[in-house]
Length: 367
Image 1 (cartoon, rainbow, N blue to C red):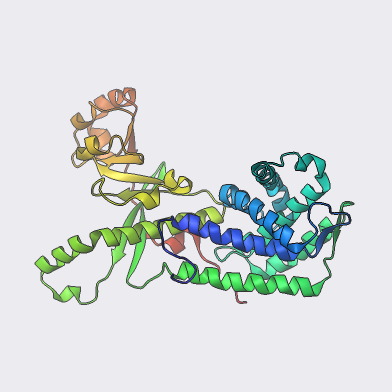
Image 2 (cartoon, one colour):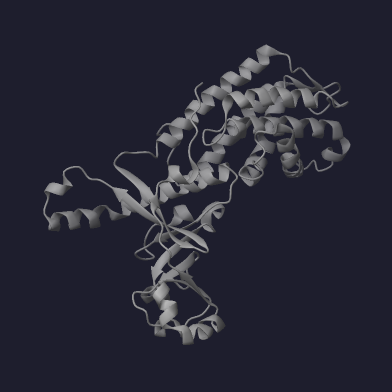
């Protein structure tokens, strides 16, 4: 176990979600003390609520955690954005328990559940360490509780400072733990760089930069041997760093970039990149000479050409190819053939290399 994460055969994203299920469930358990219903017949004891809440939260986080988080500074809008997803999660949970009719029979309790889980989710996302803001979250939470108190169904004890402080203490602890989690992927010995290789569409090429102390004093033969020996380990780190960047972009609920990842062969361990959340935002960058090897790959592919001739493309179809500007100029007469084969030419337009911080930026909050 390293800090916040246990490294097993699960993806980083799924491990992150599992932790979020526990965090949001814990917030909901505290909020249940202040967001109440006068006559609640669905649960009577806190233990009963915890069991129900964990089941619903598991459905919600698993399917919807990275969606609809844009209004973290407007809690009422956040609630409106996410209430349907929570209601669906409630229905899915009770269906799995063989109690599909509960949502219809206990509408007020269902509304109570959806509000508690939505508010707990708001607390989590509004205080996240990527672009959240803990002090603003505290103020907005009180505003949200006051707003909910206007409903005729719910009774909100928003002035209960003991419960609020209990919640805020838990939030601060989770923020510090989450910072430690993301710190696990930082090092002064390695990092990814992302170079714009195309403006239309916007594609970034991933490059892994690493340092091995003392290696500069060795001769080239030893350097090449070490590079070959540790290449797969280096690539795994590169992929993990890319996944972390994509997670951060999703947490920020912004338009997620597309990244081109140079690969050597299909024997590389690419499983970490197969998660549905990120698969559409990663494309393998492959030399056209390896077309036969990669044509049936599960990944999206962008091919590269070493020369300016078009012959290597005319027996292929429905592919993307990264080419230099001169390629289009030299092969003007062949462009219509390529279009008929559904071969999309991506013109290389190199920009500067940037780090992940320059792509999204991290806001540090003083607790």
